[in-house]
Length: 180
Image 1: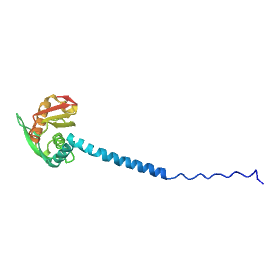
Image 2: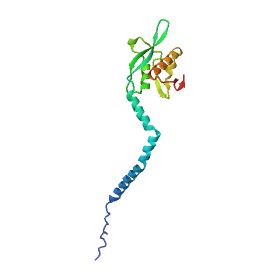
Image 3: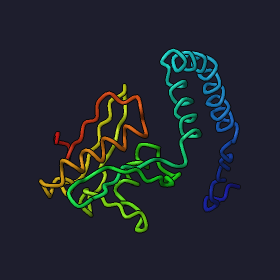
Image 4: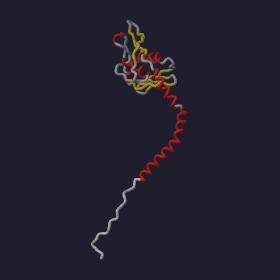
């Protein structure tokens, strides 16, 4: 006899197999390895041909050889004359040399030196770039706030950079990105 009230047997669904997942992961790994085998030599050759690696290694060597001290040009004011005098200062090691030299100039002379700076207090260095024996130094507006001292301040920057980087052919001073 057949019991009509009996519920039909439920089919048990098999648990999802882990095999497709493993196959997918393995395929992805094989694909990545194949790409690396094909493209890594090409990428290395492209980097080598571009010269980027040489520039990076030269930059690192320059940082290692960066002087710990620099001669910074300040002003000595006499009775009727103004002259430039050097003060040797220790540079901040965390900065590149050019940046550290200008920051030392902006910090001013030591109190015991008797020297002064004609760069207005509060002047900030926006940026400095030295390339192909040209220096581009960008200061905040404060640099040119006093027309009387701007000429001497410009000479201080020029003399300081020429002492620190003797091969410079030209120094361009910018204020907020505009030529001085």
